[in-house]
Amino acid sequence: MAKQVTTVSEEGFSTTNDVREFTVDIDATGEEAPDTLESLLAAYGSCYVPALRVGGQQRGVEDLGRIEIDVSGALNDDDKLESIDFDIRVEADVDDETGEAILERAFELCKVHDALKESLHAEPSFEGNAA
Image 1: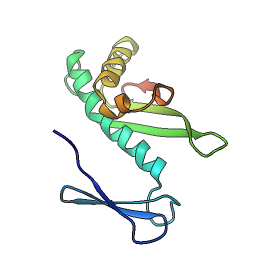
Image 2: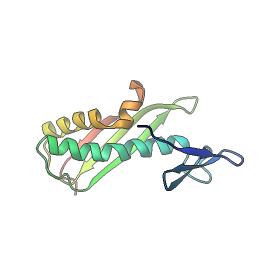
Image 3: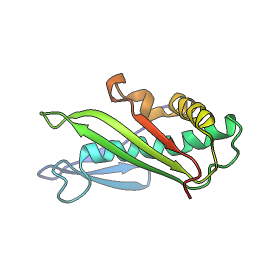
Image 4: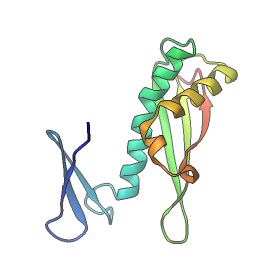
């Protein structure tokens, strides 16, 4: 099995990406659409949400409720990602020890996390009962 995306640029730095029956626009300059790094950060956060939910279920928390992740990427002098942080808030009342176990399992499950070089693996903070 493989994943397939078709990326087309008619001119400039904007692209249209056909992903199955979906279209995703990305603009390297960030003027017409999210830029490439914003798109990567969004994909990482979006991948981590279901990983958190499954990780929670596997660690005894059946429903985490509402999940909110503030994903931030620090840039180096070359405007490349240097580090990524996740500030994670979940609605469920989860103690720190269980939260850490859920985070660890979620990183094992997250496919985007697995695809990134180790220096860009997110540093998480976790807050339970954050309705």
